[in-house]
Length: 341
Image (tube, rainbow, N blue to C red; front, side):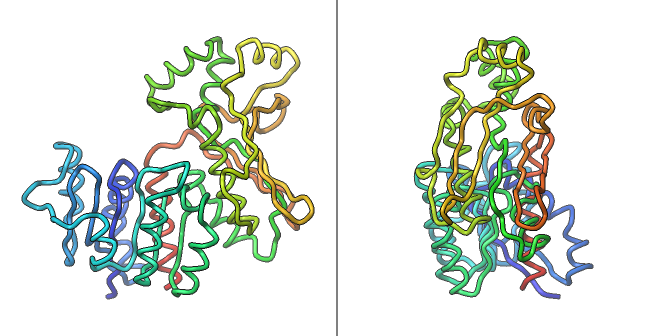
């Protein structure tokens, strides 16, 4: 039986969800693929780092974080996260550090360092895809390793895999989507009678809205996702700075009432299209007819409609995702990797 060793950079909610799925599916992986999965290193910012070339006890690692907020001191390694990436024994780096939406760092450097060692990379961090995808993909190809990133736009919902695996030789001509759950939730709450500030408070209380929601509200997160999609699906080399961006911070309850009176709803829409053989992206609030499928995307759900050369529009919807979907997105990339190596 072959062994696939994983180093995880980040062990937050998504990382632990991924680890739980590995524990749940490890016997099935052995049976179907003849592979044993071992996590040999875990690096965190504040909870300690673990290194064991024979395999970390994932169940205990999860329990330690859930009960104590950190790993057992006696088990912790003195190696830093950077040391782990550059020296630890692993085949695949799973990069799930927090997003820096304005630079993509340090995730870009983490991924580049893994490629230096000819290691495969799976990431849930949209920053590197939005800011440096072409460079990183070209380097991965040069090094003969895989670079997988399904989780970066719609959690575990297949987007990149859908296009790569099921739409061969079918050019992507553009897309439109609702890709930021915070703004979708806020706009829906405002349509239900709350003002902007009340909707933000409600979202924070329910865990849908960050303590500082400005990156979502002002469209930065949606712009990063739009750039990532354009880079991968439309073979471009852009950054979020190239996306024309307008958030929902100026939308009022009166705007939403007026839209409703005219049979419409307001949604923050991500769009891309070609003009003169170059792809352009845009994020802005748009009036949507109530009969449009986009109008029915509620709460924390997402939708992406991909315009193709030969298959018309192909649309995927994610309904009210939980953290398990993000974990599964990482896991699905792991299974794709096993099938390819």
